[in-house]
Amino acid sequence: MEKTLVDFVKVLRTAEVKVSPAETLDAMTALKVVGYEDRVLFKNTLSMLLSKNPEEKETFESCFEKFFTFDDVMPANEDATSDSEPDDQFEDERSDSNASGQPGGKGSGQGGGQGNASGESTEEDDQDMPSPTSALGQLLLQGSRSDLMIKMAEAGRAVEVNQIVVFTQKGLYTRKIMDQMGLKALQDEITELQNDTGAGERRLAGKLKRARDQLRDQVRDYVEKQFFLHADEHGKQLREELLKKVKLSNLEKRNFKDVQEIVFKMAKKLVSIHSKRRKTYKRGHLDLRKTLRKNMQYDGVFFDLKWKAVKVDRPKVMCICDVSGSVSNYSRFLLMFLYSLAEIIPKVRSFAFSSDLGEVTQLFRNSNLEDAMAKTMRDYGNGSTDYGQMLLDFRRTCMDDVDNKTTIIILGDARNNYGDPKAEIVREMYEKAKRVIWLNPEPRSNWQVGDAEMKKYAPNCHQTEVCNSLTHLERVVSNLLKFTA
Image (cartoon, rainbow, N blue to C red; front, side):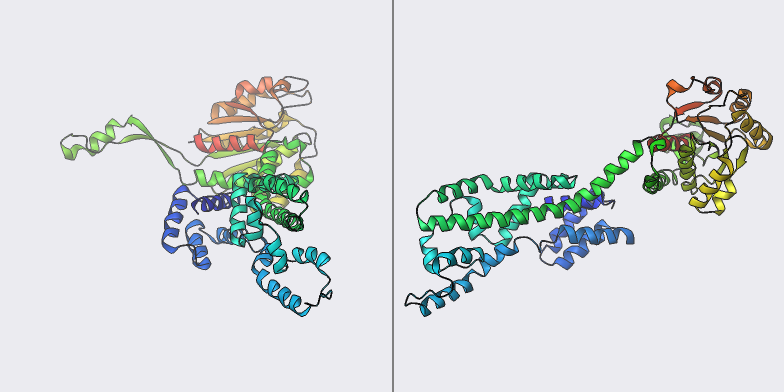
């Protein structure tokens, strides 16, 4: 059962319920006390230990019902095994009433086939029919529903059906599970029985073929359930990983909603990492002054050591985004990132330009994201790109607010249409600010081609990075939160 619980925890993690190894061990310990017989108690125990908030409780409920429900497993076989006794008695009564040899109830020849298909057979037929020799054949005709269910689950675990990713793999995993359960031996037995001249052997072959076909349908249903339990989330994760790595300029409009969800998820992760951490202690770097002061009461004996610490403050950020047509997608998602991180970066001032620079900080604070993005693109995204004019506007309106605690992020391709780049203003930013970071969506090989001015801007920046995917954006923002003091 421990393996089953571990598999269930994997399903929860796939569905984005955070379950730690310690919580998994607690669940195993608790189940040793409460047992597995009472389904409600079993479910409530796991729910208390593995889900923490209403959202996770709802996800847990859905995952539990899918994972621990086996109502659809082998209903036909259950009928064939559990109902065989009443059917046999019914056949005996019909045989007694037709003892004169009259063809009652559809005759013995055709009736044998139909009776076997529905789980019915006469006592005389059963006496003439040999027992199956293959393990799977014995399980299908003589085993209980629970035994078959356990065998199917064990085979599924052996072939790792929980690794199914796409729907087209359903047939592959169905075949793997059948093989693992002993299909080859069953097929060989059916072939051998069909070649035999005895009537009982042929009846057994027909019965095994029908049971095999029923089993195949039910294994296929089992694999389909496993697909919806595991692969649906795996597929979502694969899609997210792909969207993280694809160039933002290649995204289609139909992907924007998915990407927006990924951005918010990334931002949530960064919030959880950085919102509480205000100090980083450097173990190994002794703060001698604080240690001596603290241990004066012990006559100078070092009972209480003090270590040097670097205080990590919330950064003061100015973000300048080129929203001209060639880089508008990149700017859209950087602004989206910063909008999502307002909880831990409250001092963000956002600017947009294609030629003239405009501040959009209040617009983002007072409007929802979609309206703010649309208005920004409409008001500032239609002009001809002019970095020189943007830098002049920044010097006139914002340079006095830049100090040694300010980080300036510029996102753009630095293509200035052969105008004056005003690189000396970037130099002023470099001298006044704590950091100047330039994020360019183009590959470095294009930074000195055509009207690109990165060769003039880059020497005046603390950091220049290629940034054209969500993965790049996440890395930049994470580093900003980690190292800005």
